Image 1 (spheres, protein in one colour):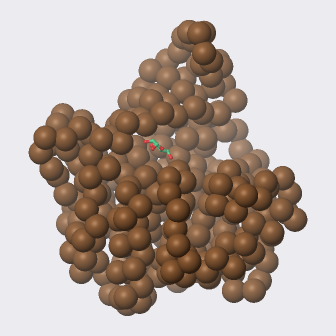
Image 2 (tube, protein in one colour; image 1 turned 90 degrees about the vertical axis):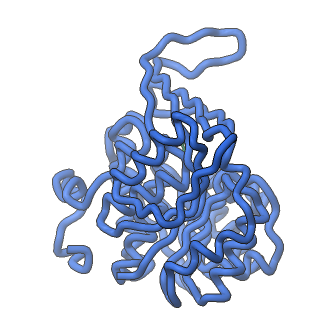
Image 3 (cartoon, helix red, strand yellow; image 1 turned 135 degrees about the vertical axis):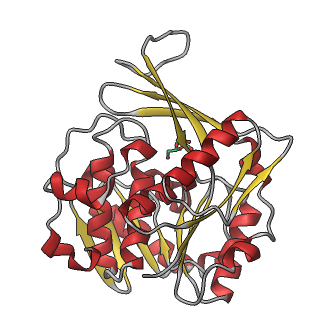
Length: 313
Ligand code: RIB
């Protein structure tokens, strides 16, 4: 099994679940929950819960929230070696509203997540060797992201880049270091200026990302599944119908599962199928990390059968 290093943010998530989302000047009333979150952390936990305990390159504050986030990562099986705790900083925080249709509205105060230095990635990459996997999201500074892509490729490591949220511009040389890019339809629009309403637009956007230099492209389409181009093969996979109650973190579940699938030797196409099931199932529970399913959860939900994914068992 390949080793995986996730790179990204850790936040304390404050959720309010209510009938509708708040709008300017209108107060809404709801039910409160607090959980460990942050895109990178959610992805690492998703992968760990599926069965490959990853490294996680992140920065945490030593404030109360940071201590809670640290112990929560470790208790989910994430390895501590690449996690760095720094003093005199604030933990990242996310305020998340979720309505009765499972839609969300998120605001973040990144705090210490913005203090990720460019060069420390080399220390984190020491845990990996050629053909292992690095996954990076976009909540950390753009210079760190560029450093991660560059150093990973120098070591011939497979790179998965999840441009979420889109926060800066990459150059052609950065795109050329991406083996798999995994935007959702909104992020794909921000990167390509192509609005994705159907398969035809998805193909156009995916080809634009390939022309920029990405080797393989997956555009996730929420409840409509995903469109991908692997090498020169087009793939469109539908998502299963589930009773979604909270879609927050579904993209993180997807990315964590995709890396997990590749690490276990699945083809990109099978890893994509698995990730769609994992992302969909994660929407049937509240929160991000508590909603990440195990392989047993997937079997119990009847979304996958053992013989379809025998390499995983
Ligand atoms: O993708 C979901 C995550 O986005 C939440 O955990 C929150 O922290 C925000 O960064």
